[in-house]
Structure formats: C-alpha cells, structure tokens
Image (cartoon, rainbow, N blue to C red; front, side):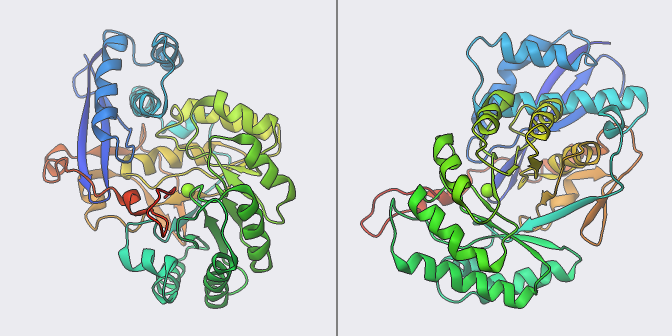
Length: 392
Ligand SMILES: [Mg+2]
C-alpha cells in the first residue's frame, strides 16, 4: 500500500479556519483524516502540508513513526509550530488509515482504553463570543456567569475563563480587584464543586502572575494556565515554585524536546499539549509518558475543529495521566455538519466508539460551503492605555 496524495480542506469557522488534512492511498476508498488548524496561520500550515507531501508520497502509510522521523528530521531545519501543526495533521491521518486497515479504533492501537469515558470542559470564550469576552474584561460579569450556568446545566463539571484584560509588565490593585470580583461571581453561581480553570494567555510578568494566583487561591481554581508568556521556562518555574494554586502550561509548545525543559525545571503541575500542534498522537503519547515520570497530568488544549475532537478522544482514552479535555462549544452552529462522526457525549463526558480509525469523515461537499476567509485577528485589539502592544 502506498500514499498517493496529501491535501488540505480548509473550512472557515468564523474566528478560525479549520485545516483538515486528507492522506489518500492507492487502495480504493482508503484514506485518512487529520487536523492541522493553527490560528491566523492557515495559509502557512496548508503550504507546510504541501511542502511535506513529497517526503512521504509513495511510502507505506502504516509506517507512522518512520514517516514522522522523515518529516521531522529530514526537514533539516526543525519545524516550528507551523511545520509541526502540518506534521500533526498528517500523522493523525496516518493513524486513521491504520485503524481502517486493522478494523480497530485508534485508541486500541495506542495501547487500549485505560478509562471508560473522557471528562471534558469548555472555555467560556477567549474571543469567540463577544458578550462573554467583554464580560470577562470589563463591565459586569453576568454574560460570563450565564454562559457558565448554561454549560454546567448540560452536564459539564468544569469550565475555563479569562479573568483579566491584556496587561502590562506591572499592574496595580485594579487588576486584582477586577479578577477577584469575576472569580467570586463565578464561584458563587457555580457552587463549591464545579472546577474553574483560569487562563491567563501568558499576559502577566512574574510579579503580577504570582500575586494573581494568590488573589484567586481562596476561590480554589482547578489550575491557573499560562500565568506568564511561554518562551521563558525559568519564569514559569519561578511562578510555579511559590504559587498556592496548580499551574498549567504547554499549549504553545511543540515536540517532546520543548516539553522536556518544562519537566527538567519542574515548571508546571499540568501540561496542555495540543494534538494538532505538538506533533500528533504518537508524539503526544511520548510527551505524556515523560510527564508521567514527573507526576505531571495532561489536559490537552483544543479549541479547534471536529477532527481535532476525534483525535483528542483517542488520546484521552489511552493515556493514563490524562486529566481533562478541552471541548469547543461556542464557535459555529454548523460545526458538526461538515463531518460524519461517531462521537457521543453524556453528562460532560465523551464516550468510546468502536468505529475503525478516528471515527470521523470530513464531508467535502459540506465543507465547500464554508471556504477559506480571512479571520478577524482578535489579538490586534490587545493594547495598553498608551497604545503599546500587549499579549492577547
Ligand atoms: Mg490557553
């Protein structure tokens, strides 16, 4: 069996373009799907898939590790997040093919189920829902609290929020008061037992980040995520060492080599690899295994499309130190119309399916109804009062 074509199908989903990757073979009707979506880098990722294709055309699609090695090591220049997203999408599609060949769901090929169901949470909005975004950043907290109640009424037992606007290198009392009032409103509305994750989008510098963790601690956040930007692991480790709450990070890191530094410096309690960026399912399993040796849990990042959901399910089912999975509920109402799938959920959990492969097929006709469009680049709004650029 040989790989005959590698192509992308791009679907505009308002805030993001989903980049689905299709790997075709010389066997009639046998192909695989993966996802390589990367915010505001759609054309680059689609181009990277095109650049990688000649390295694997004519090869046996079942030699997944071998093909990963070719794409990663024989690129000579190590792929960054754009190249690794492209590799991730291709790699997931290879697992889908292998599952279809063997008649097994991918989680069984990854070691088999270590749990019966997969706990999910949803992000209440980093920009997808204007009212919620504004509610998290200014004015009253009611839109954010209302959405949190709506989500938990559907059976979810955990939500994630942003509590501060983009911040400067040092911020005064107003920042903490702002964050605390929103956290207090959420905790009061949701009760003591719903887990509340607080995402910082890497907005703070260490002094603010640490004080922010202390201010939130009485409200028992499940974890505080990316309290400082991702480039400097020592800064993350400094915050983690003194933080009274668990620290999570890693959505912007790729490959086991970047995660290795986090572990060696003991810079977090929880890692958040994104299976569509870090190198794919097998690379994520290697990263998770390394995390296990440091007693670090895994809460994969995923605000992406429906193929990413399917890949995440198989990883979660087969990974012992998996903790909780991000699920996307707030992007476009036709989200599930562009795929045929076997995903089912109940009471805030995804359930396993025995459909061979990843259990998701892109409907290319339906996908064509939502062609590529330039997304609104939300991050451009992140400015200080004096106009200086800030992290979004
Ligand atoms: Mg995040």
